[in-house]
Image 1 (cartoon, one colour):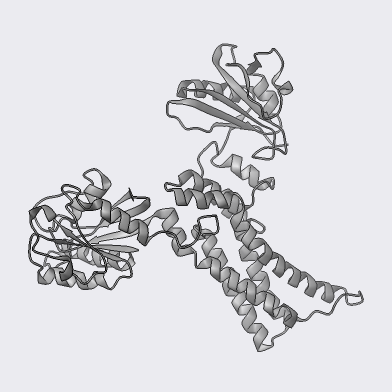
Image 2: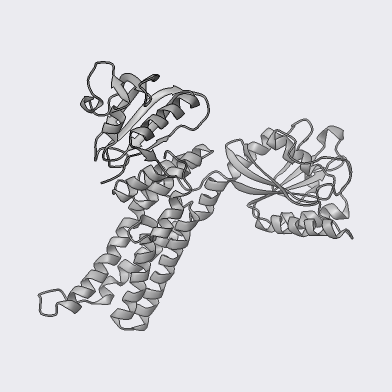
Length: 453
């Protein structure tokens, strides 16, 4: 028997509508003990998946709210169990009182992600779909939401399912011949599976190649703002963030460590990293900040080189420029365009040079358009882009096991040795879809969720 759980699914802020969700074998009975339909019938008699008006009361019979209730019977619900939702007025006090009434009637508080975990355990979602639910909730761009929605719809699972089936067929054929030698079973020959293994390995590798775009979809573009001290890097970060995130003064070296802020520029999510001005310094603390700045430039998806356009370029500018211009994605910004131009775009060896003024916002629209074009997804955001680090690691291990099996096959080793690698690949793919996932991994996954989902 599945115990009935209950939680508020819409947060704790004041809103027009707030939803209390229940699921479990006795959830309709528990909900019906605190809710009376306006037509006088019991909640158990309500039509399935139809909103019904009624009165929600506390354990003492006092009215909490006039609200709507909707019932979904197993297995036709999100969790695969009987489910009830109360659509109340969105007062946190109303929702808390309604939830307390349900606890008094026999429900228990839901744990983080427990509704989605039950959907997974009941076979309504595979693990790729379940993990995508939290990605969809947390998505902060249209592309990220579209990709997560595709994965909730099973796009990633559909890519992995035929590969897992191929490996299962291979293993089952081998063991059938081995265990039942007297049966009329087609002889097992590894060479018959060579082309299938090779194609499956290629498909896994192609999926791995999407992870670079996936990290950007999920976390945003890592952008290092680089330049010598006092060229306006912190002012630029503040202008893009829309508030004073970094301290700005006329004193060179004010920023002594990297400062990060996430912003939406155009339609692209950026993780801005305001680096300490790169220069030679005897200050040990500032020197640490300079080293971190160099590392941030090396690891960034995009580098914004900033110079003070009102002053001629210096040797320090040129040294920072040399670090930035080698990056695949680099944009030069000639800042302080309101103070006159002593640096021209032709003076800088970058493909893209944009005059800007962090103080007035001039040029930032052009920067947004450029970044949108630069990071416009090469792959469709339909759920086929790999965004999850755990999934990437498992698929990488599956791919490496597949490559190892092909190498063993080419070397002519015995079938059982080849199948050891094949079974490792199956286990790794199973960690992604949930076919072989361990209980501790499952627990960690659903701890990421909010209560009520």
